[in-house]
Image 1 (tube, rainbow, N blue to C red):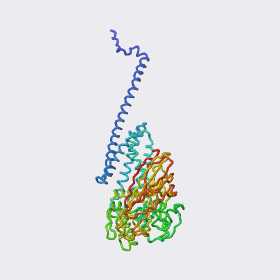
Image 2 (image 1 turned 45 degrees about the vertical axis):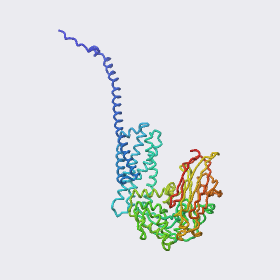
Image 3 (image 1 turned 90 degrees about the vertical axis):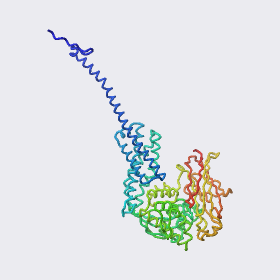
Image 4 (image 1 turned 180 degrees about the vertical axis):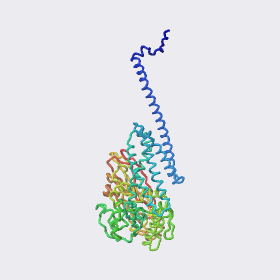
Length: 591
């Protein structure tokens, strides 16, 4: 009986087909057509999975950075414990960095548009971690550790360890800032981080060397007396030569203004005959007047020359100037000091140095000695690490921003960086970033200390003229805030050497913006035409303002600018016992 014939499935190959190669080839082709769809589906699932994974990483970073930002705001507001907040910021920064180190994150940094944003967020996270976890926290640990090693010596290795990475991050952040792909939220955060790094990086690079990490450095520390104002600050009341070696500070020699001869120094600072005519040669004869020109490199050069001529031939690697206003901030960090049986605090140090000191017997010598004693006591606290680190950083920042702390370096490379900072005491050479008007005061009452009672205000403005130029104005008001009866009772050392208590004289030097020309000058609305000089690349007008006790006088000066490309208006002025009130009305052409 014949075997039943196998019926092929519908549409399937017949036995005859099996013997033919064509149906097999068609089946393979059908299977191949299905494979691309399978592969694509797998890729889609993989990409979606990686995207979801990346999303969780981004969310983690966002959460950590927002938590860190909240802690930063807490520190800025002065609420809570600063050290705890800094450690919290560091912890959040480290967690954010950990989330960005994922290979998936790094891979997506190559994706157009998205990649630049991811790279920017990663760099911002790494910057936060470097500034807090690698710098601030180790510095706090170094300060709080019980050790016989000077505190600054303990901080140097922390700076040296953290600075290279912070420097590299500064460059990387600057590069990613140029991307046009950054979304507003990311750009805002990156710009903030870039600002911090731009400020911190050059300082971190300089500090170890300045503290003597690469060899001993000698610094001349000058105490300025704001009761006798002089250009950049107060007269140079006392001087201390100190050594910094591997972070250890040592006082070598101290001197007062009484120890210097009143002999003419050569003009080695490039001051023109025109400027010597209005400044006088007193800054080359008396160390007290060395701050007359509003340019700290000039003052530092003169101070160094006075010292090496009259006190000693020691090498001087830098000059630091500081006034009682800055000391009041520093005492907030160190706490009170005891000097000559008096307790000096942040609240009373300005009065003690600039008023009470002149009631001491043999005032010419004892007041300078009091200045030296205060400088020594504060120096000892700082050298011994007896200060709150956060408050000290804030104190130094306040002193620098107010012009009460100034620094010059004999090292040309270091000085090139310092000159671009506020601490350098150098007026900007152009108007690109800021259009700066300088208003500086100098006591001209023949050695008085009356500026403890002087009140000052500056109203500066910029407006368009019909001719299309910019008119810059500076309205300067001086008020001698003491009655005649009270002035009569002042110690002779405070009164004018020429007019006693009946009249005092203040020289006002106004430096217009670079590229402008001086115009009309008035005193109490009366035209007193003054010939402008040129100094530091700026027009300069000098007006001598006589004041009786209780009197107020105002001068108004105009400077005309033909170049409409001016940065935001700012005013720099002499640090006064009573802070100068500054008002800006910035409406220059082209803005």
